Image (cartoon, rainbow, N blue to C red; front, top):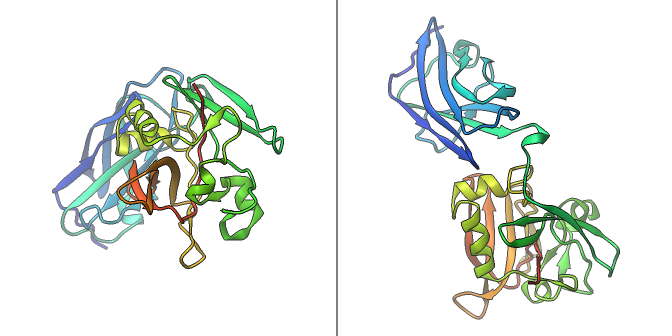
Amino acid sequence: MKLLISLYLFILPQVFFAQKIENVRFTEKEKKVEILYDITGAAPEQRFDIKLFSSTNGGKSWTQLKTMSGDAGTGIKGGKNKKAVWDALKDVTEINGKIKFDVRAKISNSKSQSKNETGTLKDIRDKKIYKTVKIGTQWWMAENLNYKTDKGSWCYNNEQTNCDKYGRLYDWETAKTACPKGWHLPSKNEFDTLLTKTGGSGSMSYNQLIKNETSGFDALFGGWYTADSGNFFNIEASCYCWSSNKSFTDNNAWILYLFSNIKRADMGSFSKGNGFSVRCLRDK
């Protein structure tokens, strides 16, 4: 078997809250690839889960490198000159053309989780208790709302277990009045404030807002419901949360979305008849 690795290498650096993956480089030694990188901005007690991926089609798709040793896997400390070794011949027989490597890190130990102030909210209507988190000056629910309304809300695939895990999906009219007393459906401007506080639209805020990351917002990928066909889509792949504001037409409203495939968080406009998640914000 022959391994052919082109020397055209592209590296995708990663930023996650105050920590960064930087200075990524590689060398080929005896049919193995040594990928060197730095984790900067890490506290001494922090540990990271490190995964490495490669792409040979310009980043359209990624394959996780399986046969790894060194500074890859769980429990990796921060610092400079981390070295992960890929035993390439055990994963592939040949690589032609340009190859991209992506080093991805996730904070893994509890000491490094959100330092934002947290609390709980009890919904007196059904006695459910929700986690809450303060991000900047805003107090957010750290879970999706799961209040059953008389109409205009659904469990994904009509299965209660999905409501228990991801919360209910609401149409826009129902979402506007679904939050418990003292809390409300956020406006577009309030979601914009959240995105700005967590790094702005794109991958920076995505990396902070997803579950078990440092903001404590814990976005859940509960998918969505379309009233046009009565079908459910994209559970565990997309997160959509209603805002209280109409967008470009009377038929659409603004939503916060997070897409796991492109690792992006931003605002978008969708039909009011769709079923999306609700994150309530505490009244000032």
